[in-house]
Image 1 (cartoon, one colour):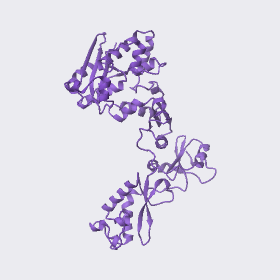
Image 2 (cartoon, one colour):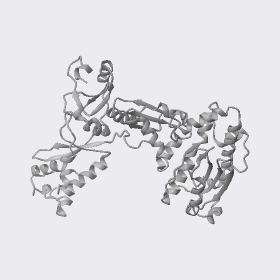
Image 3 (cartoon, helix red, strand yellow):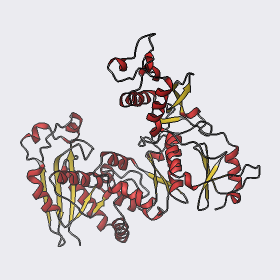
Image 4 (cartoon, one colour):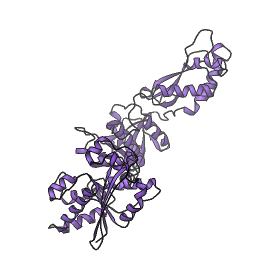
Length: 472
């Protein structure tokens, strides 16, 4: 038998990177069966919230005189090293300990077994696998719930029960399955690891009842990958170091995926799905109807005036003077104001300051503007300098007369005027996409597509357009 460590922690909260340990309990079981128990209150260095005090019975007064984790780190490490780390919802306890050790410059690693996953594997007919459910189901003897050593003892009791019960062969099979897979969130079926493909594509994490919220069919998170399996597992390997990953891992109940022919398809599907589904954990790539760009309006006499336009309404196949893509008008004006300062442009001619007849703009008063607002610089010269200042922001003109495709394996990604129309696998799907209503322009999709313009092939301008006509 391996040497085992049954571990439970009490903490100030649920976030391993921000909260701290208040109590640690360990039941050590040696290979020869001998047992030792250890419990230690820990001064977390931060306040324990009232609801946590009520839940655990551990108060701020109780830990005030307790040693900080750094004082007991060596003792804890000695008791854990060389043992299988067993805990209920093990990612929580293991993640907290990894972070506490990390703050001291110590790298802590151990093989981990989660008894939530073990219970799910052994007793799939039951829906609930929290510690209270195990106490009731297996008649475990609970002395003081939500204290570290008492809960560690309960985990040890569960371990003993399943090893003496009939069907211990099933226990060994379950342990072999769990130990053969990377550590997963407690509510995920370990068998998912064998199903995940090692191909490019998009993956979707779902929460309770397969949704992001009560009654909602939306995912928690949508991601892309060159290798779906590797990328999905990397989320759970990194969750100890990131509060965002930890929160996501604790909520995941189900994983779906869409395989694609290559990386481009994965990028496009991810961006499109995030905008369509608005997952709670995706902050980037979300749909934004306020995205805008600068255009130049000819006011005559050589004066080109910047004018904001909503990007969603523009036909980038027709316009040749669009500059920058901004999240909102405020950002666009901040950028233009910065260009005015760095290129000595006129605030009045740029529309950044209201024109007052016969009076210079503020920039001219502080000797930054060259005086186009009061006739000291020709409009045409000012416009030429404005175009030069905007050059680095200029958006690419759509280079084709109509739609184009990017071929990737058996997939054809249909693009028109920097809009992603969808992915077709045959001529019927292609014709359906061509006939559908065009989606609005999206900044994130433009940035993806602009990188791959060299891979685009224009569609023939005929009614009999087919994928064969654009090659492979």
